[in-house]
Image 1 (tube, chains in turn orange, cyan):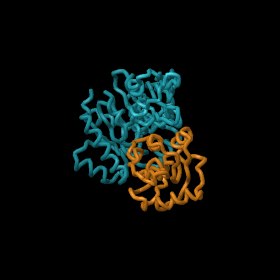
Image 2 (cartoon, each protein chain N blue to C red; image 1 turned 90 degrees about the horizontal axis):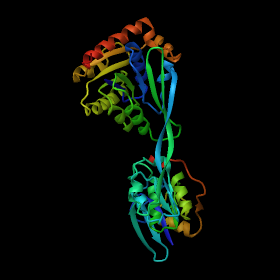
Image 3 (cartoon, each protein chain N blue to C red; image 1 turned 90 degrees about the vertical axis):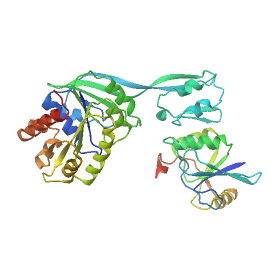
Image 4 (cartoon, each protein chain N blue to C red; image 1 turned 180 degrees about the vertical axis):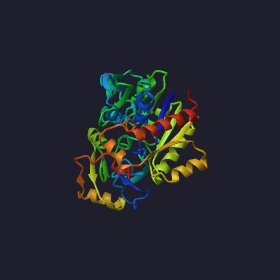
Length: 120
Length: 276
């Protein structure tokens, strides 16, 4: 299973970014191979539709689980339609966030957050 | 000659200046501040006709769509996304460019009309008035501005522009032959006017400044105009009386003291714009 964490940096010690569409990087961790790749978030530099671009990118990467702060309405719709699960997490190092998820301590995002909340 | 009235900063008096000059000179008034067109509140025209403005947005037909994702990649505005076994359209992001249809090899894309606003036309006793209105919740004003301005006849008119220096203003200026920059004597007013001047310069059209809410001192805007040799078309004094008239939806040019001020501005404008 592939897990993506929205993050401010390229390593597992960098902090989780609570913004999904506008976070700078995606840390994608594969639980089977225990390998990680870091991708630049295509949404971060989008003029508009950042959440859509970001969701589209992680769907393409075959990710099943998203760990972030909030999802805007557009990203939420896509994540739901793609049958992925998203979990809400506070600001902490990426590896801690993944650990919390694996222990089942993160709560699922069942409602979208506000639009354009990640612009600032 | 189409005269664009813009400002940079919002709330400096674009509508006050353009409606009063339009009435003073008997020239049509066009409100293309489509997100909040308020000129008609002051001019009170009798509406003659109304026209809806549409965008063409794609419909992806599931029966023929192969889910190849070419349309998603082609869309520069992220209006399309692929999720599971579906291409999802976010219609408010669609700019009506048609790229999705061009790249679709399965021929699964058709278009449908989506109304985003309207254009209204009317008359006061003296002048023709038009305005664009963007529907509430719609993010894109440019298609309405383009439709409104592209259909105007070749006569002289005032174009009341949106605030700022964004796409909405850029598209309004594309149709202008001259520009009036309305500002107020404040740091914000001056700062944003300088940005608006930078924009106007790109169009190589004559322009001049009108100071609204003028404190009648040698203020920073007057100094700037002098130093940069920017024509100052005139100043509308700041007064309690003007605020009262405005708050009741009245026209300043119908008060004798202000009538004279707008007539003087009109004269100076004709001189600067070399308009006969």
